[in-house]
Length: 119
Image (cartoon, rainbow, N blue to C red; front, side):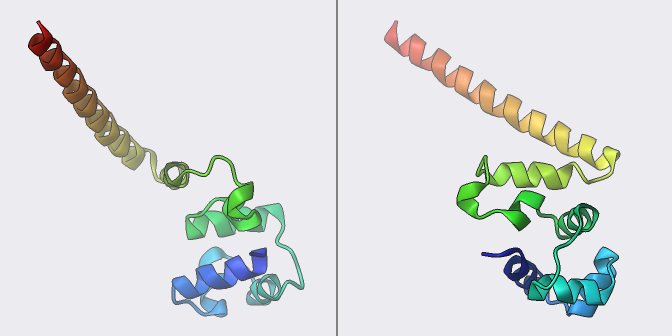
């Protein structure tokens, strides 16, 4: 899928007009229209604004799925998290650390119980 098609798809998924999405991103509406029609390519700055505003990576905008590495849903979520305010990032980090510790404890406990059964 081309960049212009991805932009159209993302805009429509959000239920926005070309005018509205351009305003949200901080672009001139004519620039957005040209990006969607393929008449112009966004600058690196514009591409970055588009990606940040739409919570997608620039890789997602520029490359097909098989071209993006790593293809991992979490990497896009972590990228979106990195754009949040620091206090909100810290909350998410604490939640993740808690979930990881819980998982590891469960795994270690299962291993301990299995070892007891074998004895």
